[in-house]
Image 1 (cartoon, one colour):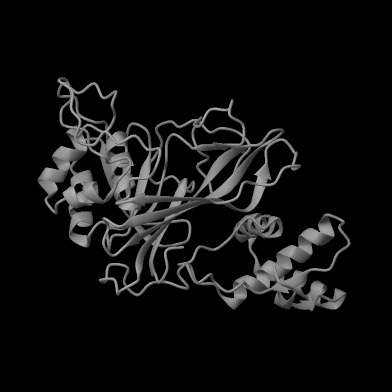
Image 2 (spheres, rainbow, N blue to C red; image 1 turned 45 degrees about the horizontal axis):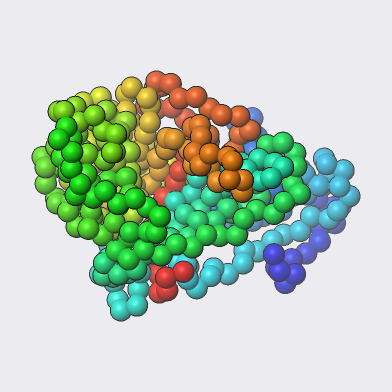
Length: 369
């Protein structure tokens, strides 16, 4: 935060006036939402992604929230009105007019995933917001750039904060094949239904193999081999497994519109997947929700573009600074506010109101990060 972003210091009279406005304008239902927003704003947790516009009204209420937290906490400090830092040139500066348009020379497809992850330091564990950014050149067989970073203010699980969060991790993969990733593509075993395919770690070759044919995609979602431990022998994937395959492919932001629409039509035809139209994401983007009946796992898809907007993810990813801690554990929190306990999944109604684990955004950038 830069000093020139501080516009004014609140006087007692201005604070009283703001609090009076708050009490008169916010109803009982809105009060809970505003209290949550206030705590997030004061903690510095909420950071708007590149494709979400900000309004002056939102910043005015952020200032009120900060002032309220300062008084209630007895911190004895003045609250200020903040203005956002300008966007970095390597990231989208605003909503793209059409992320599906042909790229100009030097431009990149940009996809961003935001979720919550567990980070283990030497003496502490935290829930922190994670951002995974992906830049793909106009020629997908070129070098992909993936950056993983922990952003905003973490939620401390044990009250310790002696160690800094890790720096962002940058990875580069020719054609989307990143170092350290086992690549079994094309391998086969006698009992597998098909040769191995990279649904769960999509690269340029895999994306090119997807065709806008609903029947072919339906068969692939049900029977393609995606795990070396796949029992095969004619076994079809569960609805949850098929949703996970589609999520990974859609999250690249690289699928053509005709392929995306064929893919979600294939999802709708899978047994035990329920389609719930006219829903919204936590940031109020219109969505159609695809739900696995056996687990309640969901995909939120834009009905106009067939782009992935949000999803439930299982299992969660754990980032660690200790070699003795396993790489993966548990299930991610089904909320935009990171809890301090693990949540267990169970079959639930498809119109449940809890937020999905991850949200996705797409754009076109002029640089690769």
